[in-house]
Amino acid sequence: MTNKTNTTDLWTPRSSEDTRALYSEWAASYDADITAMAYATPDRVAKALLSLSPDTAQPILDFGCGTGLSGLALHNHGFSCIDGTDITPEMLDQAHAKATSKGPVYRKLWQGKIGEVGINPSDYNIIIATGVISMGAAPPEMLAVVIDALAPDGLLAFSYNDPTLADPAYMAALAEIIDSGKAEQVFREYGPHLNEKVTGSDVIILKRL
Image (tube, rainbow, N blue to C red):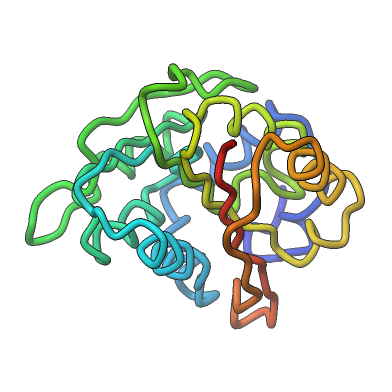
């Protein structure tokens, strides 16, 4: 069985079905395990998004929301209308339970289908995908699928961790979107991802053109 706290195991190419199985098994202990590794990227994504989009009442889709840690980070930074989708029912069960003194983190949650976003381009002007389109999770071509789900001028905030930054396929997918004129990069900053493992990530925000 994969050692979930070993990042070498996590950042290994696998099928979408294998990814869903891994996170299904991990769901119950995921928050505790990842918090123990000082998971910093959700908070960094929320701060970056707030700097570009201060309207905290507009709907946001948390794509690949998992147990809801990214939604919780958005919530803690004042965003109040957050929906989430994930392909793993067990992770969604954990997200459903996420709440603060202000109430539930998510307005609605649903199980998505592999390879799809499951929305119309007019549904959300902001999508986040923290740690989702990356080595060992969603494949590089998923970046274009998510961009296509945004309306013009919409924002996609996501992250590429160190193994993903080192993978030519993921970097080519990002370059293709920018070079083709489909989107422009409006924010990019390198910082901590899993501090305990001394692993970093780029937080990136693209604007749909």
